[in-house]
Length: 359
Ligand SMILES: *Cc1c(COP(=O)(O)O)cnc(C)c1O
Image (cartoon, rainbow, N blue to C red; front, side, top):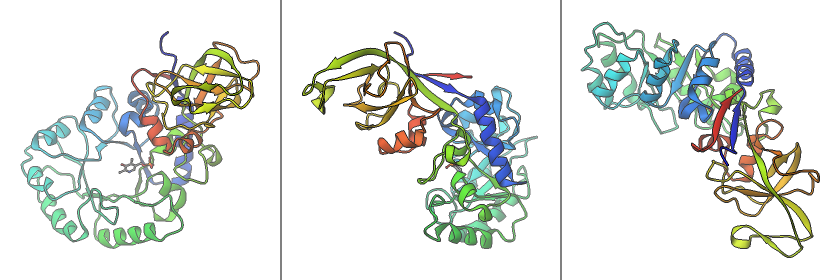
């Protein structure tokens, strides 16, 4: 058997989600986050389909180079910046944009001797997430030093990242926003805050550039709503097939560890997908799976190449029938919940064996 697990990527759903975001953010500019192979959806076809985005965000220089080589013309920002002169030179050579988030990058930047390039830099300030970013008291000094460097575009851009924008119960995002506003008051350049959660929950605390990721792919970052609830369409549908249909008697077990024991005589199916394809091993008994559009519960342990499902709700199911693991009619958010994770991780963990197909 070959490639039973297939991730269909709907580029029309992607474009639909982009237009929803566009409507929400008005005349703000959009930097579409396509890191981690476009959240597992396939970098190149996603980037090509997002022809109306103002820019792209990636996590690695290699991804940026890949986009340039494929003919993408919009600005591409490497969100993690650079940590050596060699990396900085690659950024310049491929006409990528960068981020300065730490003082150790300044002496590297000062060695820049690019001839024609004008490097586009955003400074990143840490307003409370405490991951990447210059500390507030370092910001003005770093900006002064960078502004003195010849080959850098002025005015500098400036950004921060919200730690808790999916939460409406605290004032943490408001505090980050206020601090960012105060710190950047005298900066003339473009300002950027706001991932998907901030776009949805803090529309008054966005600035010139927003940086949506998960929403583009049709998924909600919020615990209380799915992407479908928000009018988004799932871009990825992960599917496979029934490779066996069998019967079991009450009292018998299914799968490794004998964790599932039938309470009645029942019909069940074996589906050709497992953690070897990226389906999470942590998905527990009861996780929904669609067999011929009927919801059937996963039963027993997920193994490397197979899962087993209770077919009571799909009595006509037969070998070869399509099984949907998430996507159309089955939100990835719901599956993620059953596997103690988030849809972001489900998407990113698909393996090489899963065929990613645009449609
Ligand atoms: C990943 C990322 C985003 C997008 O986050 P989503 O929750 O997927 O919208 C925005 N900004 C930065 C800096 C990121 O790394």
